[in-house]
Amino acid sequence: MNDQYGRKIDYMRVSITDRCNLRCFYCMPNRIQLVNHSDILPYEELLRICKVAIKLGIKKFKVTGGEPLVRKDCIKFIGKLKALPTVEQVTLTTNGTLLESYFDELCESGIDAINISIDTTDGELYNQITGSSKYDVSKIIDMIPILIERGIRVKINAVILAETLENALALASIAEQHPVDIRFIELMPIGEGEKIKNVSAKELLRIIQNRYPDLHKVKEKRGNGPAHYYGAKRLLGCLGVIDAVSNSFCSKCNRVRLTSSGQLKPCLCYDDSVDLRKLIREGVSDDMLLQVMEKSIYQKPRQHKFIEKNVSENKLMSQIGG
Image 1 (cartoon, rainbow, N blue to C red):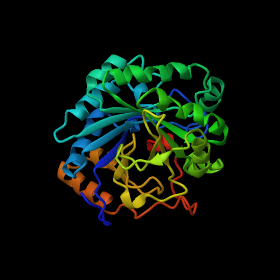
Image 2 (image 1 turned 180 degrees about the horizontal axis):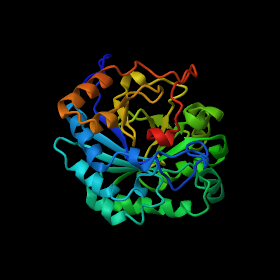
Image 3 (image 1 turned 60 degrees about the vertical axis):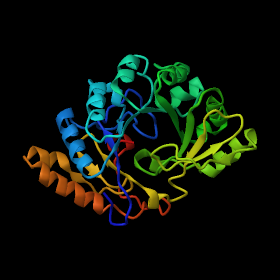
Image 4 (image 1 turned 90 degrees about the vertical axis):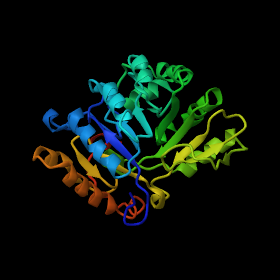
C-alpha cells in the first residue's frame, strides 16, 4: 500500500525479542530494564500480524532483536514466515555470535540474506564496545565465506563511532576478500545514541577514499535500505553508508517496524505507535486489525527530525528493533 505521501510501503522489520547476549554501549547497556516475557508476542501472534501485513502489500520482512537468535525457535519462525504466500524475502539481522551454532538450520530455513553487525575487527576494541569478552570477532568474520558458499547473501553493518574510525579500513577490506557489502551507519540520536557525539558518514568516506581513490557510486539497487553504495576496482563487494542523521532519505522510505511487544511503528524517530498486542489480546478480528494497521501505515510521517535533534522516541534501539 501507499502512505499519505505516496510512498510504497512493502517492507516490515519484525523484532522478536529485546534480549541480547551483548551489551553494546550505544544500544543496550547493562542497566536497562527488559520487557516482561508475558509482554513479548508469541510467534503465533507475530505470524498473525505478518499475515495481515501481507494483505496490505508487505512482501519483505527483516527479523531483528535484540539478538533474534537468542530466542528459542527463532529459525522455525523464519521458515514459517518465509513460507507465507506472496512473501518475496525474509532476511535476518544478527550480531553473528551464534551463527556457527545455528548454521545448518539457518541454511535450511530458506533465509534470503543475513546482515551481521560488526563495528570493528579489532578484538580488544570489539570486547569494549560489546561489553563482553566471551566472543571472538575473528570467528564471526570467518563465518562469512561459509555462508556465501551455501548461497546466502551477507552484509556487514557497522555503526560509525569515534572509537572505530581508525579501524574502518580493516573492516572495509573484508569486501576485498569476499563479495559482501560493508555498510557504515551513522549513530542515530535514539536511546543511548542521543548521548554520544555523532560521527558523520562524510568523515568516514574521506578515510576510505585514501585507500580506494577510484571509489565511485554504484547505481544498482543492492538491498531494501537507504544506503548509498560505492564500488572500487579492489573490491569484490561494495561499501555503503547510511547517513540517516546528516541526510534525510525519508522520501524513499518503504518500511514500518513491529517491536517485540507488538507496537507498530511507522517511523523510528517518533514515539507514535499502535498497540497491536492489546488489540489481539482483546479479541480483535483480522479485518479490524487490518484497518488499524492500514491507518497507521497511511499516516506515516513525512520525515524524521534527526537533523533538528527533535526526537520524541525515548526507548532504546534494542527495545524498538534496531
